[in-house]
Length: 307
Ligand SMILES: [Fe+2]
Ligand SMILES: [Fe+2]
Image (cartoon, rainbow, N blue to C red; front, side):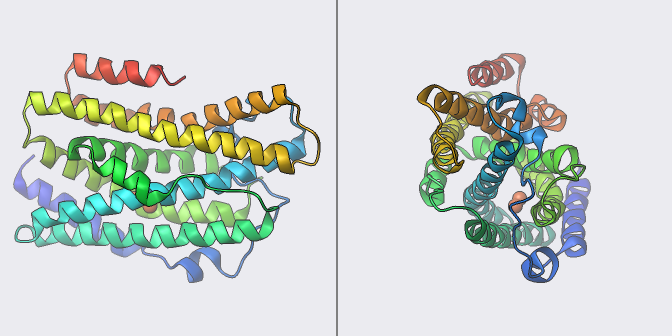
């Protein structure tokens, strides 16, 4: 890609950012609260077919718990994404000022998204019975992620920002049974994520051009380790969320069913945060442009071990 093409791409991201800009209260929340008569997260993400022992009302409660975790997981991811984007912005300080503006806007948007997800957590906490806990500290998680190579962090970031869009378009948008407020949160979030994914790709390619095959091999080890870090967080949260469900669903859940619920929650979380993004065609295409077959096989094998 020529320098002019790249510059134009950053410019397009700036224009898109200006065009879709929204406000948490005026555009998204609009004084609304959560109504527990509605599902939060759609079936395409919750995979209710795995929750065979649950009634319809209990499946709705599971979708609300997973929806609450969904907002918290995005807030957690955005903590490390924003720190990495601020760090990469330094490379543009005395270069392309349009690229710098694109990354400054990206960062400001992720700060706003984290504030939105904190508001959503508080609003859902008002509507749901007590006892829910989001188990992972976003700063501790970010510290662990940012200890890995930039190549690996950008690979994970593009993966996340692509599946954000995919989830909205394929599962959330079309589901008429979802909470309108929950849908709007992810509609507005999706609007600003579209340009983030374009910027991730530009920054990842820019960084990739600075490393050799040996460094890329090590970066792939780092990427695989990062997927493991995400999976560790998901295992802890699946356990916490299944236990919260069992404590608050209004009936006794025997130990055998509790274990099955935990496994079903983990399967849904791995689908939501690992496999749906890894299977995204554009992620595959960008990855294929930077890696050889042996490297991609290593990634594929690591992902397959998480099923
Ligand atoms: Fe975001
Ligand atoms: Fe983003």
